[in-house]
Structures are given as C-alpha cells and as structure tokens.
Image: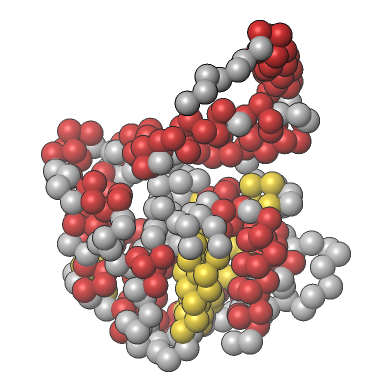
Length: 356
C-alpha cells in the first residue's frame, strides 16, 4: 500500500480555507437573528389547559375551490407541531391550503407538573374529541377529516375507532401500527424498560431525555455528520436560518405527562396492543375493525423511527374497504419537509380527500 502523499502547502491551504469558512459561518449564525416557529397565518379558535386549536388562514391568491369538510391535524405529543409549517417553501400546511383544504391543528403545548396524571383517555376521548366537536359546530357538520402524524396518527386511529361517526376520512402519516417489527430499534430498546420506576422517579418525562434517545438511534448522522457538513450550508443567510429552524425544532421537546407516557410505552410498545385490538382507553377497547371510513396511509421508505413494515401493518386490519397506501422515498422528517414531499404528499392528500 503506497503512502498518502500530502503536500504541506496543500494542507496549509485547506486548513486556512476551513478556518475562513468557520469564521464566516459562525458570524452568519450570530447575525441572522431570531427564526420563526411556523410561517403561515393562523388564528386561535379554542383553548383548554395547555392545548391550543389553530385554524390556518387560506391564501387570498388560491383559486382552488375549498373542500367543505375541514381537516384537523393531530401531531405527536413528543415534538412540536410547527415542523408541519417550518418555512415558506417547505410547509405541509401551506401546501394543504394550496390544495384546497380547510386546515386546523392541535398544538399540545408544554405539559407541566399539573399535567402529570393526564391519561391517554384524557388526550383521545377528552382533548381531541372536544376539538372535533368545536370544529364541527363551527362548520355546522357532523364529521370532519382527520390527519394524524407519527404518534398523533396512533392517537387518531384510536379516536376514529371509538368515534367513527365523527370522522369522514382518516389520513395517517408515518404512523406506527405494529410496534414490534424486527427492524424497530426504538421498540427493541424499550421492551425491558421499567417505565413504572421511571415515571415514579421523574413524574413527567423530560423532553430532553426523549430527544437524546431519538438522536442516539442514528448518532453518526444526527449528532455528528450534519455538523461536519454544516459549513457548506452556511454560505448565505437563508440557508443559515433553515439550519437554525431545524435545530430549534429538534431541541424544542416538551416534557411528557407521566401517566400518558406510562400507558403509551406499556400498551403500544411493550404489549403491542394496538394491532392486537387490546388498547384500553378509560375502559373502552380500541378495535381497528371499527374504523369503516376511507383511510390513506402514508409512510417513509427510509423511516428509522417508524419502519415501513410498522406502518403498512394497517392494511387488512380495518373495517372498511377503501384503503390506500402511499410510499414516500424518504425518512421520518423528510416526509413533510423535503422538496420532494411538498410536491407529492399534500397534493396527494388534497386529491384523495376531494374524491371522497
């Protein structure tokens, strides 16, 4: 094996160029100012405890007819929902509005010690149900369309199974259904977790604890590689802002209500009760076969948090015959922020809903 020929003058040149880019990049990061957390105009239409229900305002220039049935987005409890509206050219919400949808979103807020005893029943049969009722009353309708994302998709499946008459169409996006597929690393980690001890010791589960758990699933990519390539993304203010928006979202992790977290880990991950028809919410048993409305299931082919098999397990387990799957060639976050996703996912959702 021949030795590597590194000329000193070339090495000095590369180190000098790296130092220059590092200095300019740091200056740019400090000079871009505050970044927005959500870019689309919206109004508050309902509040309860930490929860806020938003209605997004349609764009005046949009000439597409608006779907008369409103669409409610239910996001995960473990992250902040402004990922769906992260920037002007990468906003799922903006694209849904452009596709003619009337869009509402539940922002769960930041639970504190007063919320420690909130259960999944409180979230599904309480908060979600009251938001659905509020929107339906506002539009003088008996039903709405529901879009659940990630953990919010699992909650939306539970809600629809228990309140099918109120849901006209259901969309699930990067949503786990089978929580024990062989390629689910997160599930493998939590199978032997003593969640009772964790909740009793912590009360609410710190968001920072969960965030570092997610990062540890792909440590080289999520905690190393992106920073190595960071300097190449800091050649102008807009790219610097986009980087900071993503970093802000990644580390903006709400604490989790202790009792709801306990129930979710035990019933969904450790017992795999959703696919078995054994999830118990306040004495009501969730049966996927009770979902008879049309369902659109969107999954990421390179999703490391919700492997495709975990999401595709929904097929054949519902009570209705109108089931559609859409595969997106990307990962868990890319499915709603990448340029490819913006061109594919919201238009597909809009067309699918309009046809029904």
